[in-house]
Structure formats: structure tokens, C-alpha cells
Amino acid sequence: MEMNRVESFSDGVIAVIITIMVLELKVPTDGTLASLEKMAPQFLAYLLSYLTVGIIWANHHHLLKGALRPDSKLIWSNNSLLFWMSLIPFVTAYLAANPGQPFPVAAYGVVMAMMGLGFTHLRQVILKQRYASCGDVSRFQNRMQLKNVLSSAGYAAGIGFAFINVWVSYAFFVAIPASYFLPDPSLAVDEPKAGG
Image 1 (cartoon, rainbow, N blue to C red):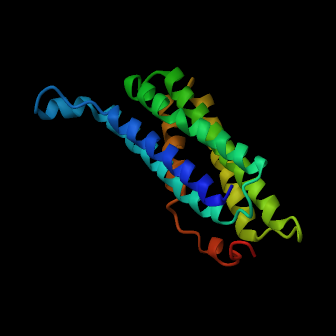
Image 2 (image 1 turned 90 degrees about the vertical axis):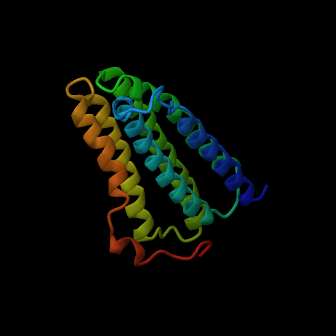
Image 3 (image 1 turned 180 degrees about the vertical axis):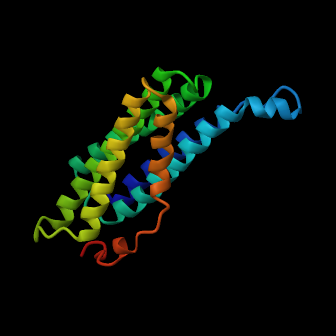
């Protein structure tokens, strides 16, 4: 099996996830502004999840470029990530239908935290492939791995806060994807070429 088959399968699953999420956006029954305002929680939940899936897809694409071979560890760690991602449409719809309730907010956080851990594990598997011979993981990869772990921890904190104040959970859920758009020039300094 070649790496492009793993990437193609993953891209297909992610495309289906986004399609399911957008199909959950129900068209208002009338053409008034009030009907659109009622959709605000649904649209905001969709937007948050879409950004998160988009970030995961972009990082997943770059990460797989560094893999040397599609061995069983890589395939199953990738499948684990995709499993948690496949639950995003469900928790997004659940959150959109119950935006002020602690349990749906916590459920959203659980799926996002587990997805983050799945991505962290996949990165670790690929790093072991790339750096097995020299053991010298680049500063870039170490920083990205730390960012992945901190993102999962942030989602986990959001789970706990859901039962105290859902708005604090939302702050975590928005801040995590936003952090991936912040420039960090130190991340591009010493990234080795794929396979190097």
C-alpha cells in the first residue's frame, strides 16, 4: 500500500464529514431575518467545526508527507483519528440544538479532545518512522507535538468547565482553532525536508 492511498482515503472521509455537517444546516421556512437569527447557534457550531476540520485536514496533509511507509501502526493510528473526526457532525448538531446545556457542550469537547489525541498519536507514529535512525527530532516537530498536546488539554478543560459555565468552554473551543492561525516564525526555522 502506498501513502497516497492513505491520504486519498483520509481526504474522502474528511470530505464526507464536511458534507454531512453542511447538510445539517436546515433552510429556514420563511425568508425573514428573524428566521436566520434563530439559526445562529446552528451556523456558529457549523463554522467552529468546519474551521477545526479544515485545520486538521491541512495539518494531516502536511504530516502524511513526512511518513516513510504506510505500516499497520500508521494505518490504525490514522483510522483512530478519522473515527473521532467522523463523530464531529453528530456532536456539532447536538451542540447546535442545545447550545446552553452542559452535556452537549461537554460531548463536543470529548470528541474534539479525543480527535486531538488521535492526531498527536499519528504524529508520534510518523516521527518514529522519520527519526528512528538518528533519534534527533527537529525543534519544529517537538513544538508542533506540544501544540497538539496542549490543544487536547484545552478541549479537556472545556469539558470540565461545561458543568460550571458553558461560555468558558466555548472560549476554549474557539481559542484552540484560532491559535493555529497565529503566526509563529520559529516553527518554520528548522523543518527538515520530507524523508530527510
